[in-house]
Length: 406
Image 1 (cartoon, rainbow, N blue to C red):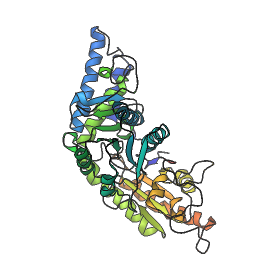
Image 2 (image 1 turned 90 degrees about the vertical axis):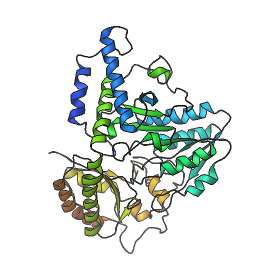
Image 3 (image 1 turned 180 degrees about the vertical axis):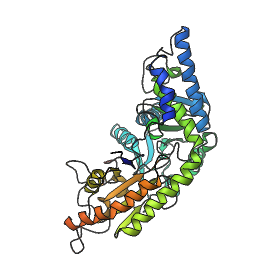
Image 4 (image 1 turned 135 degrees about the vertical axis):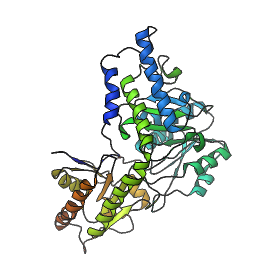
């Protein structure tokens, strides 16, 4: 049975055009791009072309692109680089709703003696920019704020944040893994110093990413070894996947209008239908300042994992906004930061669409979901009259940032 795939913030299918461009590099064009002979040279030219394509899609110079293995490596490289380049500055600023690729690095640096300011968010997931201004210090090495949240889709005002950081001479990193390919992006005007992206979020294969490093921004390599990537990231390049990333970014730029019109309309129809047809359902995150493909909805009195299991029986693929895993009852750190009540937080489902989704698929979800929720609520120990604590309190001890993810 062909799955109805609504989990595109987790990973995307490889676009046919991207696969077609990869195949020659996986078969005939297998040379090492660093080799001096012509066979290696033609592969090196493919690498250069991919760099140009990524740069064109982001609005930057090819020399500002460093290819990596994934978004997590890009995030790690940026944070460690900023710290290594500013050994006298021991303060970092980030948010409580970052992806673990940033949260866990910040916690690691905190244990190593750095001071970290954790910015909160309001009930819709938005930051208080005045709080950001107040948090900056003379010894602030870096501010790291994601472009768009992977769970709720909430988009942050990076241009405004960049202005604040620039006024104080503070470096700014953004995890844009979920934003690239879904939102228009022009790095020549945005003002960030480092930006991370991942190929498998925009219809390229897994195992390839990129880091934008603004010309003039301090940089220290995270992976040491050979001279690849102009000495900024050692290791023989994953040329086939890099070529794929270049084509995927090019396609994403060409399809950006569809993402923000047809895909957004499908998302809105799905969201509206679920909220109207299922009682005690709520939207998590900002209703407007959101990625065009993402909706995160909580269903009161039920567990997200149980919802997903019943959805999977029908071939519907989505993900739980709750980060509950085997042996853990903790809800998502993002939903905790938003203050989502306990009885809603555990029953959160994230639907994330792509340009390959159809109206017929949305209709199927709208037809099946009310019955799934009704069936689970009939079995739930937390029904009306036997509610859990109110006020967003969770029954577990889970106040520390970073215990969660997508």
